[in-house]
Length: 447
Image (cartoon, rainbow, N blue to C red; front, top):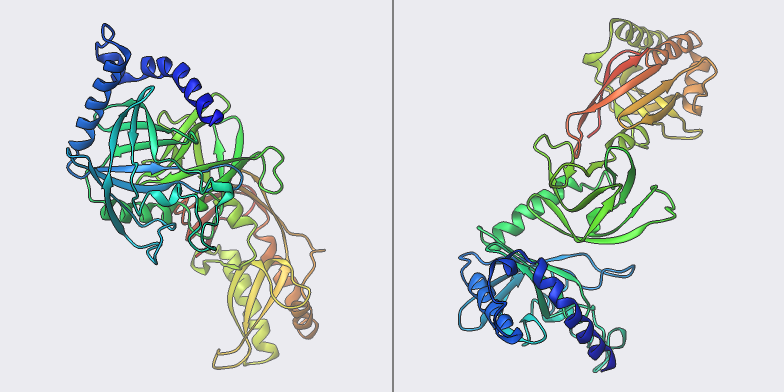
């Protein structure tokens, strides 16, 4: 009780600042009226806005977002003038077998006259109340979750600011920021568009992202989860902090505004050229670590043989002839860059050899090359006569000594510094490597 009284005292002290900073509160001339009458007028204005939304609102909802917290959840709200609200969602916390299924639930809402204007969802609603329910229904009867805190969500919200298409709320008990944003599509259409965007910008192949203001760089670590860390490095970051987001049809929005350098960001949207997500003024950008994905992979990215230089094509054919000269059933198949398989595996150039005339059986052999990411979108490849080979390559060259010089000469054609240019920054399938100092242009298929 003391904590609640203290919270109300703090809220009452902070309310004038909230009122004076809200864009709509500045417009309404209520200052000759009593405080309670101003709150009443604010509630009336907000209710009128909430009701007059044909498709309703997306409610970007946040429960506990600390180290052990949760992602943001997209709820949807349709208000009527008689105090009824229909909430809907397909979030993973829905009960009674509805997790992940689109569900609607109608309950009551009120505009309360407290120390300030408050929007309250104060009767049970299957979509919302699960976040504030102190009892775990899966445990023994009356088993409290985290001493009654539940998921540390809120169902009563102080109105921080409002406009015709946006209402900013703050949880009355736990203080999470929640945004109501007017939508012009159905909830199901919004969910579908959001899922499509999330799948595109957070595919399972690329898990980490650069966050940059053009000078400083941080990393977003696995934002696909919706509850993730921002740190100064990918592995074992020392100063990482937790953030939560709601995905949108355009990108994602954090619960609270964050900063990098002097740039401030909260909502990040896919850029027109689809190379990054960016804040409203373009001063903060989020770029998938696709270059690390290309360089630091363990799979073998096939080389596009149709893009070989004249020298590369000639060496490739000479290697094939050397194989056939040893055994007519042998032939050279694909060649790629990556980590070879088998014993003594190396990272470098990897050849696939067909071991029967029908080309139904294969073996892979590898020769090491040093490959490293030197800067964003840049790669260096170094090949030397001392490079190691895996055990399979050693066995082949023991039987076909004339092939070793050809293999090493082929690998040497890739030595140089390159710009890595993907066909798609978020879902690269083909990457062009353009030499900046030595080397020959080549193409990788990185599907």
